Length: 316
Ligand SMILES: [Zn+2]
Image (cartoon, rainbow, N blue to C red; front, side, top):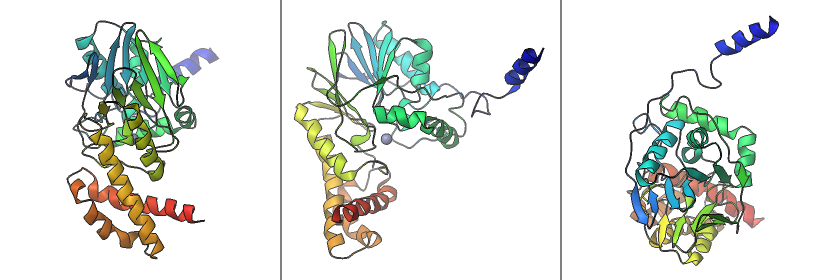
């Protein structure tokens, strides 16, 4: 009797962290072919909002002889379900593996949909990402997405990677090999970049964006520059940013220009005794080529302050 009563109580409780109804389906987006058997769904460039329903990243789809591999299945269970529908347009094989590029929830909360449809699929991520989720960061991202989309992502839960991977790891799926690149803190502390070996293709995560200024407040600007310099050593020809259009090596070089301009100027102006808020006009003038990027004004000041802290720390 006691057990039955407890069961009824549990059944009456709302699903954890989720008070509203399940959010609506995300409409299908096109899969753009970027290389042989490799596709990217280029999401909108805006930050998560009720109109894009949180979907605004670049999920990757690689069709191997042993099944489909997905990179970053999106911001919610609904985004993940959309990615799975698009997968079916390019392959009738099951999804066998997922890579998550970093901890930011717009990239990986779609894991839930993959796990539901393909329970045996391996989900790869950096150990720091797995640890952050174990410490509650996944739940925070679920709540943030619900708030930013006004409930359009309701029903989403945090499904963490179950296979840790580190720099240099090579994962074979069918006739494809995926090499993991990680060079310390960059966009975050948990970034991995995924090279599709022999195909000249690299998934950069948010270490490189195009058309939008990255948020960087937990990684390292200097580290992000180093990471960019390392990844071009692959000699790849197709670079897929975390947000924005896929392109050639120039995408990485442009990102290096952005971060190097900020870092070198903050270093110089710090030496001259300026405080971070005094530096913005001068640095902004040097970055006018980026003034059309989404988040330019909002993120530039934050990045100068972030660089300032790193320059200050290096000075001691
Ligand atoms: Zn990110």
